[in-house]
Image (cartoon, rainbow over the protein chains, first blue to last red):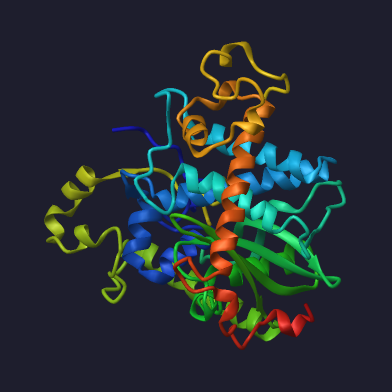
Amino acid sequence: MVDLPVNTSFSTLTPGLQLAWDSVSLGALKTCPRYYQLTIVEGWTPKRRSVHLDFGIWLHSARERYYHARAGGESHDDAVITAVDFTLRATWNKKLNRPWPSDDSNKNRFTLVRTVVWYLDHWANDPLETVILANGRPAVELSFRFETTYSSREGETFLLSGHLDRLAKLNDQIYISDLKSTKHTMDKSYFEQFSPDNQMSLYDFAVGVVYALPIQGLIIDAVQVAVTFSRFDRNPIPRSEAQREEWYKGLGHWLRMAEQFAREGEWPMNDKACFRCDFRSICSKPPSVRAMWLEADFERRVWDPLIARGDI
Amino acid sequence: MTETQQSPTNTQQSPTNGNPLEEASPTSLEEYFSRDPEGFTKQDLEVVVKELRRMREKWKVEEASGATKGKKASAQKRPEAGSFDDLGI
C-alpha cells in the first residue's frame, strides 16, 4: 500500500474532523455523510479519473493562460496561440508518447482544443472585464482561505478555502465569473441549478470576506460541448445579503454535524442520494465485504482543500 | 512553443511544408492531434487555430440555417431570477 501524505485540513485533536473546508468537501458532506467519509475522510476515488474533471481543469487552465497573456500585452490571436499551445502540451502524455485517451465523444482532446479556440474567439470582445489586482495580475484562478467564526469543541477554528475562476466587472459592478462545461443544452433549467448551490454560495460568501468587494453575485459562463460544436452562454446568479447570511448560518449547522460524526466515528448513509453515485456498488454490498471491494475498485488519495485543485 | 519558422526535428513529418496556412485541412488537423506537440512551431499552432476557426464559421452558417441539432439556449426563456436584461446588456 502506498503511504499517503498527511491531510493538513484535518484536526490533530479530533480524528476524522475536517477543519479546512472547500466546496468539494462541504458538498460531499451535504450530499451524503457516507459519501463524504469515503471520498474525503478516507480519500477513496475511482481508479479511472473522470474525463469531465480533466476536461474542466484543462479548459480553466487554458483560459487562465489566455488572460495572463492578454494582461501581459499579447494580442488576441497570439494569446489564443498561447492557450492552444498549453492545451496541446497538457493533454499529451510524454511518458507514453500518446494523447489523452478520453473515450467520451463529447469531451476529448479535440473537442477541448476546439472549445478553447471557439470560446476565446466568441468572447474576444468580452463585455466582462477581468479585474486587475493591485499587483497588476489579472484576477483569475484565485485561491482563498479564511477563518470562519465557527470552532470545534476543542477550540479549533474552522476555515473555508477554494479557488475562484475569475473576478470580472460589468457596468462597474463586480461579479464572480465561473466557467462550467456541459454536454447538455444550456436552457432555463441548466442555469437554475446554480441557485441555490453550495459551490456558488461559498464563492460568493468568500469574496465578500477575503477581498472585501461589493459583489453582485455570480455569472455562470457556460460552455456546451457537443461532438461537432461548442456553444456558449452566460447567466447572472444574484445573491442578496440575506441569502449570504442564511448560507453561512447553515454552514454552522453542517460543521456541527461533521464534528458529531467524527466524534462518533460514524457517517450515516443518505440512501436518497445514491443515484449515479460512484460508491453505489460499494454501499449496495453487505458491510462486511465493502472494504475488500473498495480496495479492488478504488484507490486512495488525499483531498486536502489547503492544497487541492479540482473544484470545477 | 518555439518561435522559429520550423523546428529541425519537425521538418520530416510536418504536414506544413511550404505555406502551412494554405494547406490547412481536416487531414492535417488530425495529423497534428496525433503528434507530440513538443516540437510545434508557432506556424504549426496557427494552422491548428485557423482550421478550428474555419470549422466554427462553417458551424455558425449551419446553425443559422437551422441545420444543427440541439436547441439554441439563447432563444429560450431565461431564468426569471437573474437575467442580463436586468443588467441592461
